[in-house]
Image (cartoon, rainbow, N blue to C red; front, side):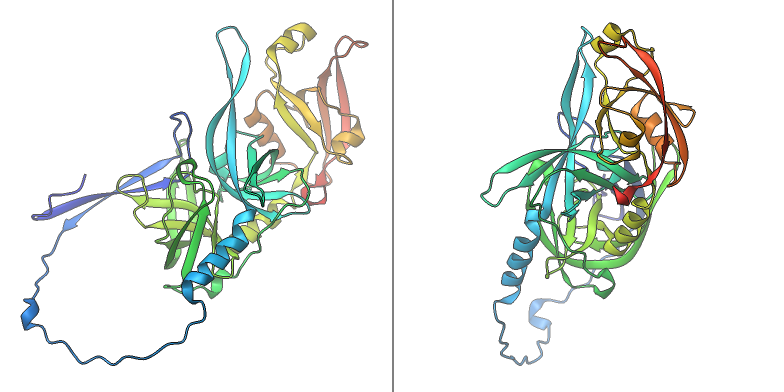
Length: 386
């Protein structure tokens, strides 16, 4: 939609979330900003008429050079970068449930001991159990089931958790020390090509955007790092690293006439990442992993209609385990609020705080009870303590 370059020109700039998509699914919200103006001509003198000043040459001694520093930074950070694939549960014409890939993005491990992975919230939105793919030293990959343990839609940041030993993790750097022109590296899975590294420089600091949401509200991105390192669909949630291999940002947005990289990408500052994650891990948590219930089980158990979330796993030592909840329980309500679908659960849990006393009502079916409603009283724990 560009002008013909012969007078007044018109460019269309697309600010897009860059989570990847599989099987033709959309990759994120898109904002189109139309910019119009004149295209001034540029006067140039013939080459022969230009005065060329004398130039002196200074010999530099560089040990290894920028290329070696870039390779060392990628080598340090790449093992901690993961592919994040979201799974959608679909129902066929016979009422059978199937799980199919819905979209993909990138993430990175920030805490190996607790198995914490950071990514963009828009990568995992509406999906509580994304699959995390970790690269092994021998080049093979391992798929790990994860759960979204905390998310901030307003900040576009989500924390996932995986259960595995010997995980690599990345260190945060100090983005306040960055200057325009500093080398920077983006690592991610553009178009599904995992562990792709692109190199550029810091183009600007402190950028701010307002991005309209489908709901009609606006999501505000502030303190963004702008870079010309190529960022494409699938890079969302991946790390932006400095030449020490430390995370200085999370790749999140691109500006492009076509939707593909035009060398104008944006990353959430690592300082904001740290602050948001600290707050998220201070929130309240019950301690169970939800899953979509099998409709055949619902029919066989004669369970209450309209409820589709079941306890898939219970975190050891959590309030859920201590209260008596167990795998297979069909969730009916929490704290007096009815829970039917994943978004109901997310909305309900987003308002709880450590120390809150809650009643959880479930439907439990086994060979002895043949089904019945059970109630549990529990005290909400701090998310970061589990």
